Amino acid sequence: MARQASPSQRDEMTPPTRYHLVLLALCLLPGLAAGRAIATDQGLVKCHISENSKSASGRLVIKAGDRVIAEGACREAGLRVPAGKYTAIVGLDGVLDAPEARRSVTVAPGQTARVSADFATGVLQLVFTQGGKPAAGMAIIRRSGKQIGTVASGVAAHLSVGRYEVTARYRHHRRDLGAVSVTAGGHKTLQVAFD
Image (tube, rainbow, N blue to C red):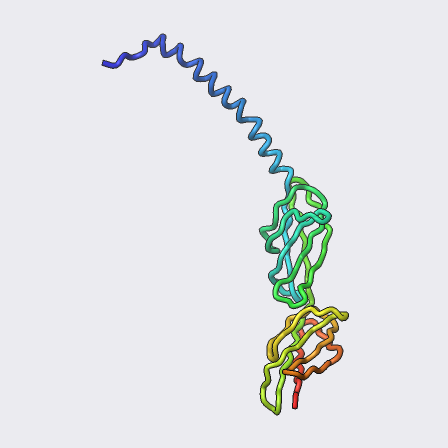
């Protein structure tokens, strides 16, 4: 038969149990306080990106000097970073010349900072023919003498607004088309015929 503790014995066991709970709480409190300090020392950077004044998708990079602090999709959910002063780099997706906008941003502890950028873009498309029939060629696109990409005949090149130098290539043929302007929301098609 199990032996039960008398009332006096149970009373004697209670104080050590309370003592241990108090001791445990004292051990945990500094850690909890430190966790709160870390959380409140951070802020949030929310991002909005648009293309020709319409919502678009892109990326956000937060930098301190040359060091990347955080990066991810440019969206309302934002990126959490330590409080401080940063450079926010907003980039637009799906554009051949990969446009970026830089913004200075100050993040206060426990606060939300916002950055936004609107990019003006248009479309340039080249259609090649040879002897009156569609031909598979390639267009080389440069800006200020620097090549930014190539696109095949019939494929629409999504570009930032500006002037570009375009060269058409088909087999052993090469033709410089000179400066071509891309306008906001515009769609320019160039017909290039080879004999």
